Image (cartoon, rainbow, N blue to C red):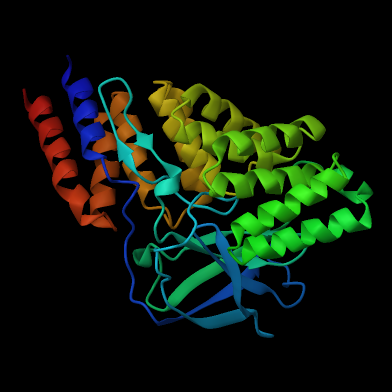
Length: 359
């Protein structure tokens, strides 16, 4: 076995717990930032600022006339809160490994993963991870970027939604409110009633699938999401959540395929699917595709709000026999915001790589 393969396997073992650990920040902090348009144009109106934690989302403040915002925030208790990945969720959590597959992650192991975004109808926001305090300067979280929804490319809302009867739309809106309030079972019940009234309601099937996924009902979620895809294959959220389910079940081929569909439909929506697909391709040992995905994730997240991307990037490069750049990526991870429990294993990997190069 070559030194590169041995080191890759060692790094795999060292990644146990990588995903399940989040960097902490002080509770009760006064956080501030600003909202800007990607194209430099003025922000078209007042913008809501939302926090999503473990699948539960709420509005915490609104922008002022100067497009800036501030709010008091305390980290929520992880006990008793639903876990899971929604369309706004961030990196993979929970991991162990063996010699044949390297990154085994479980999305439902999230504990205190919280993301900040702006919300304005007709626009998509970037995200800032509040779980990585090293990603911003003190109380200033930085810039939330807005861009218009590209209806020709992403088709975020299904055209079938426009035909939904009023009663079904009311149930869907109620379900969304309940979902954002963290009342996941009640939200699922409301979405179920909506699709009973209007079985062609693709967006309601999608939201029902997401709610079921967050409750851990993967089989039911898969049925709902596949129904959404059958009704409207151009809604990226259904493909994305199907990818997360497959990822949880370690069905790497399915995960890569589903996430690939989501990326094609709306490639600029979020770096998160690119991160997951990078890990899935790595598990499949398709390192060229894995590198493409993780580089796209990094391009979309230049401030490394997802600091684990450096870790995955280094692992992929080492697997591709680019030991020099891979080692640099791991050192960069160590120099920024690594989990303290990762430091020993990464240093061991770097030492063995150096030893192998010296032989």
